[in-house]
Image (cartoon, rainbow, N blue to C red; front, side, top):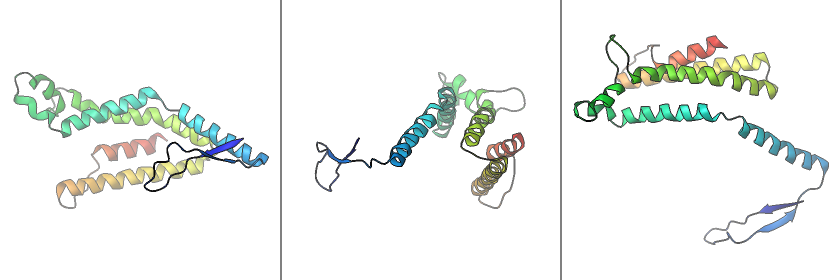
Length: 173
C-alpha cells in the first residue's frame, strides 16, 4: 500500500510531481484508514438531495427579495410575479407567506435523520437533549441579536422565524 503526497512549494509549480512514501503497515493503521473512509462515504451517502434542493430554492427566493425583486411591483410585466414576494394583509396568502413554513418543514424533515445519525454514532438521549437545547438557545439568542440590530435599540420579540424554529425544534424533540 502506498500513500501519495503532493508536494507544494511556494512559488513553484509542482502539480506534475507525485512523491510517494510507504504507508504504515500495521493492522491498526489499515483498520483506522478503512474506518475513516467508510465513515466518510456513509456521511456522504446520507445527504438527501431533495431536501438540499428545496433548501437551496428557498434561499434563492430569500435572496431574490433581498436583491429588490419586490421593487418590480410597479412594472407592468413583472408586477404579478413581484406581488408574490411581499406580505399581504390578512386577506389571503402569497408565495412569500410560505417561506417561514418551508423552514419549519425543512427542520421537521431533517430532524429524524440527524438524530438517527447521532444515535448511530453513539449519542445518548442526554447528549441529544443537550445538543437540541443548546442549539435552540443559540437560535433564540441569534434571533434576539438580529431583532435588536434591525430596530437599532434593545427590542426583544419572539415572533421571528429563528425563534419559532428554536421553539418548535426543542418541543418536537
